[in-house]
Image 1: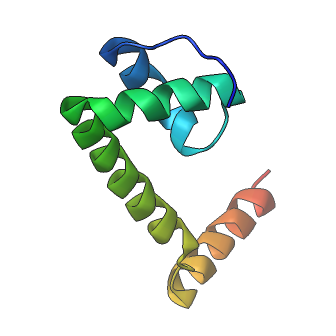
Image 2: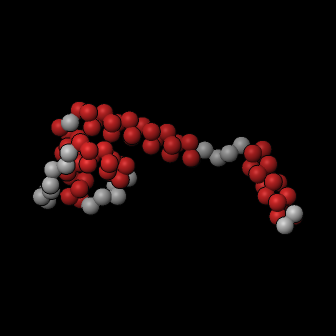
Image 3: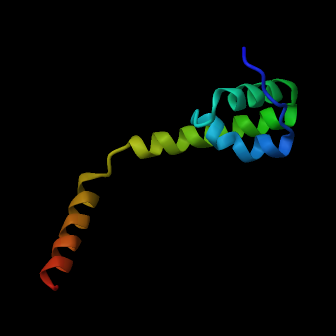
Amino acid sequence: MSKYEAVDCEETKVRVHEYLHKELQEPEMEAITAHLANCENCEREYDIELVFNQVIQHSCDEAPPPELAERVLNRLREIQNHE
């Protein structure tokens, strides 16, 4: 386990999005993991962010209804024909 500098609540809240998406370096990931394990407030906010990201991800996985896709394509064709 590598050494890391402790982070506070403010730093954790600022970096939680990057943490969720594993966009931080290992020492930063470890520091935030340690903070979350010892801070109920930040852990609660992390849980909210996690659920929020899951809802967004689920919503983006759904294909649009065929009628919507067709309406969008028709509108794009109209715009192209008028140019």
